[in-house]
Image 1 (cartoon, rainbow, N blue to C red):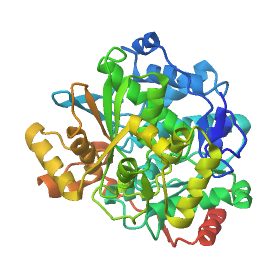
Image 2: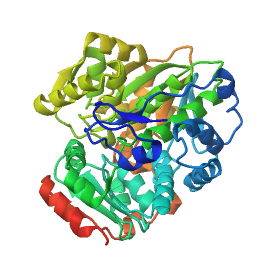
Image 3: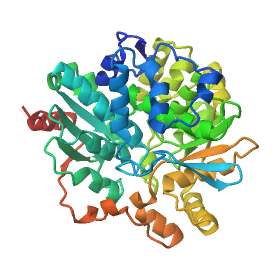
Length: 462
């Protein structure tokens, strides 16, 4: 298995190099040169397996000879041993033919733990073998950062710097990033929005002198291993509902397109997914792009679902790569237009490709709050605002096919929004009850690239 860049001008890499590299040197994102299919019988055989064993079967064809079979099984087992539910990603019925996929039972209470806990194990094994060290830099709209810090804190051969938009994450999200005491992790509050943070990370990767000097690695959803780990729970949920003999649809609240792109990979592998529905909040660039063909940034408006407050959706580039027939030059031109003029228009053929696979919808702030209130009154289920966006959009797309809405975070991560909507403040799990008593450690920086690079150089352990 080789991995190629969406912009077509970077060398093909194996899985280990792809994982440790993150962003390709031509600025593109890595994808497998082919997606290995699973037969109907192979998908059916997943029924009854543990989540960990399903993960091994689904991911094994993508990793080549990077890890031996027994080692890979062991790494998967360690990745998920800290989850608070034995099913790891349990399904809960919300209404007739509508199910929630609970993805918030990991150590930081968000779906990012499924990928980040595994990446932490994979990085540690690969770096121990090579006796190398790396500097991980990531941008977060709230959940990726805490998941990355949790996964990599305390490791000897990794320094971690997480950029988050100052004042634009929830208090719980911030404290999950700023309260770990391990010296190898650093929370950086950046003046600006998530797109500012993400652009800084990309600029650092594209500064090859800095990149090579600090041995930069990325764990944002630009990292293929992140997407691969998320493919598993699509299979897990669908098989529980009758796949491969029954089609299933998924609604995914998303801002950066990574989580729903994992569903697209599952579909390419042969999972019978009828609809993949993109659910956006008021920062609805993905919904506008799919419905109109125009991908035009419009400024980020802070919302009660802050992890989706994004206008530059990195993983959409991967979908465009396939939509344009894997023409890297065409994708590179679109990304140049986005950077220079703030947008681009998707060609008719590419748009038709996307619309055959993806549907979309949006939820306003009022609709999100009303969904939290109504679902709680009717079912006693408490939704985080991101999950509520998903439920609102899913309800507009229900059919005879089972619908699974991804519940991406625990409601206690966004207590103010939830309390405002339904009048009750959700409690943190007992293991996090002292979160607001822990001292914080955070550095506030401007959006200046040189200042940020100097800070990172000065805080890497020698």
